[in-house]
View 1 (cartoon, helix red, strand yellow):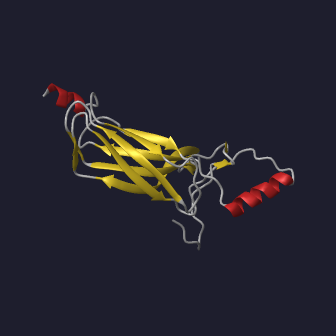
View 2 (spheres, rainbow, N blue to C red; view 1 turned 120 degrees about the vertical axis):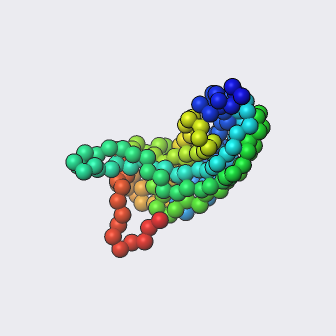
Length: 176
């Protein structure tokens, strides 16, 4: 009984860890991985297990001050209404189709300063006080056409300094 109380406060409860199977992906392509779910010291009800794609964006508040926020742009539910047994190890594979508007974060494996996309693993243990989240960086490489433009700019002598994303939509253009 005491173990169940401790698990509800995060001590000895279930743990999650996402593993990305692709080193890098491109906008419009699949992101493949698996979530490792390891049961804690007691059986626990899993109300939800899923992954969320997040992008770090600049967002202005009502005073005009800009702050960085992690904005979710795609949620995938992997499991719900299940029980993870004490000590049980489960592997849940997933594949997420990236939107075409997914921002690039790397070029030829080099991180672009100011750009961040992550995959957040969410585990809802029905009333537990723990914060069972796992966030992994996702390397998004440019599409071939985008890469040609970046390569041409580089040959012209331009040097990448930094980039940022802003929360906004382009009027008149359908976007995911």
